[in-house]
Image 1 (cartoon, rainbow, N blue to C red):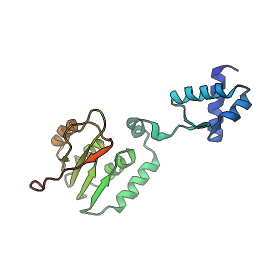
Image 2 (spheres, helix red, strand yellow; image 1 turned 30 degrees about the vertical axis):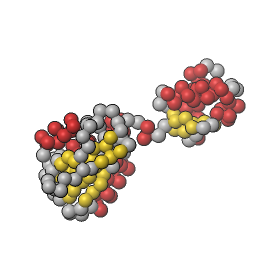
Image 3 (cartoon, rainbow, N blue to C red; image 1 turned 90 degrees about the vertical axis):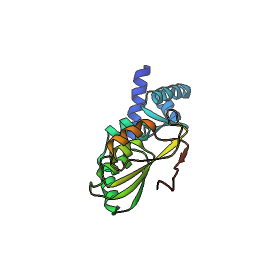
Image 4 (cartoon, helix red, strand yellow; image 1 turned 30 degrees about the horizontal axis):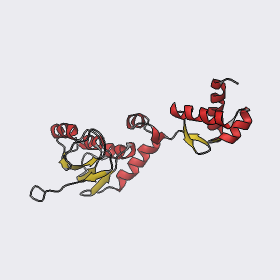
Length: 187
């Protein structure tokens, strides 16, 4: 059996069974476990599956980039967003984590909602920049390349120019340490 045929067989088995074990594939395909492990490593490198001890699982959608996941908005994410929005009331403080589902929540907030949203996600902050009654507190997180060296608080309050300016100050979200500084004089 050629390498390409063997790898297609592995993918077919994975799709059918939801998992593959190196020992079982070795017996079924009449090749060594080392060969199967090498195939699984290559398929994982190509993004076709997720390698785990002893075998492989289907590729998790969470391993895709944010942009890829954003383009694959599922009906489930929209349903979750709508359900979450239904729980939000006027004048509440809402904390939204980063990710495509919280972004859907932000995009489904009603335009007449008066609230404060705290997030570390620039895409969420930008999505809310058009909401004149929503105050957005963008928490800068450190620990990743490309982040500003000045942690602090950024308020958008529906001001698109300021949102655009602050987006350059906080170009990426994520990291290991998140800080918010609150200036009592400025509120």
